[in-house]
Length: 488
View 1 (cartoon, rainbow, N blue to C red):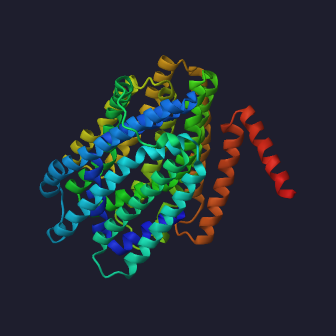
View 2 (view 1 turned 90 degrees about the vertical axis):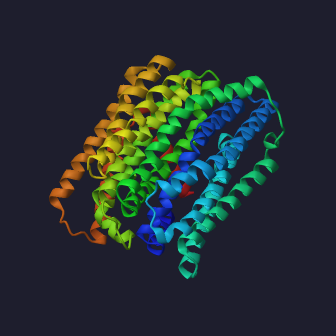
View 3 (view 1 turned 90 degrees about the horizontal axis):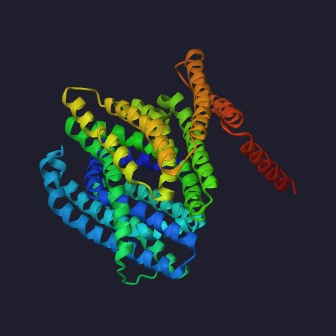
């Protein structure tokens, strides 16, 4: 996380605020064009994990090969759309300075290649996660970070155009990592050796599952890449940079949540596949609660000290960055619960209703933001809009669907929300006290002191008010064992 934030600082400094915003905008176009990838990625993860739970090697190979075929076809489709519709948008819709048009064209081409690599990599990554080979995933993440540090160094010493060089090197890094995943999977798992198979029923099942996920992924893409493009059209690359920086901070905050969820989600699907329904329900609700706590624990100190942290981190801080960071972390609290609860539906495979209700509500954010910007609203209006949307999805829509379709206990869901609410009240009290008692001008020592004190208070409140008694007892026993092992 720290390395990612450091590289962002240097990249922003080397590229400049405007070029950084242009890179994010171009990435937004390609991201929109690959909207099918998220739907197929969900299907890949679900079917591979489910078949692993059934312990049928031949069937697993058929599923993997079918999924890989789908992704190759999708990659070809993305290339065709990107070089036609995408190019039209590039030249006729985006707000790109005339003197950067040639360079950004080639950046766009590199972005297409990178996206194609990412699409065809999905089945291999999904297989590694389904096999729970988290060490491999962690090692590759370290290699990825090392490569990006090398990119930063090359950018600093090179005389080439920084934006073009940056996009080209990122494409090369993605290709290298994709090749590693492929060679590792083929060597270690015979099920990932591709065989051309066409089983009509399997292809139909995957297509239907992906189809129901499609609307959800359109919503996600509009809410991310689509909003970036809106900001470019209505405001400037500087505002895009501010939004992109806030997303970078949010990604760093959520990295721990994603790693936690990556470990627990296969267990949710496997326990459900083994008919352990109560255990699967418990895992989903605990996952939602712990995800919320992790975002709060990491994001809350940032909210309290955002201006000082941004001043330390960035050489230039674009206007609106501080406000965007605060609001996107609040949005992420609700989003973490919404995403975790989704896996209760995902495990059973009943995603039809969710894929209709949740995305329709989510998609509304895009036209609402367009209208708000059209009538002269601040860029921050988009953040408030999405906070309301994700709060509604997490607190109303997902619990209702879990109760109606999977048979979850409303009492257990409400109990989970109550514990999250109690800890949130503690956080709000800390926020009000700190703003009242501490001086506006911060120092590094004051920052370290407040972060330490706030973290201790939050951890204690999460332990006593956030966790149920059995979980507290298990955690206490685990800590005691670890302390005993350290003493030996």
